Length: 97
Image (cartoon, rainbow, N blue to C red):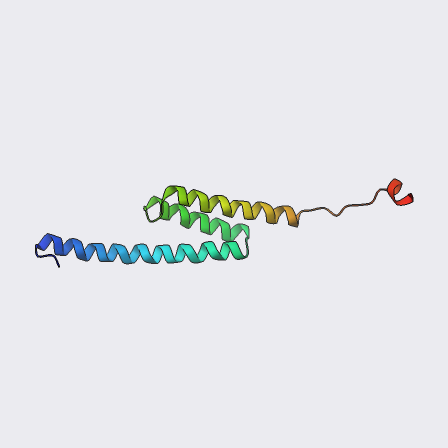
């Protein structure tokens, strides 16, 4: 335990910051996992905003934020492709053969 008055104050402040960082990280993990389970544009957008805020506050590393955002955007791209995939039509020439 700290003895000096300023060290005690710093310890109190550090505990508050640690608690806030923990809660931010917890919310971040939940939103990212929800976006990965059922990727929609809105969920990915919310997760991306939280990832950027966490990286800005140095809660997570900037490179980790980039990796998370990249993987989420890949999920959106794949879901868009599968949703917009046109049905193949058989041409009349192939049908006759």
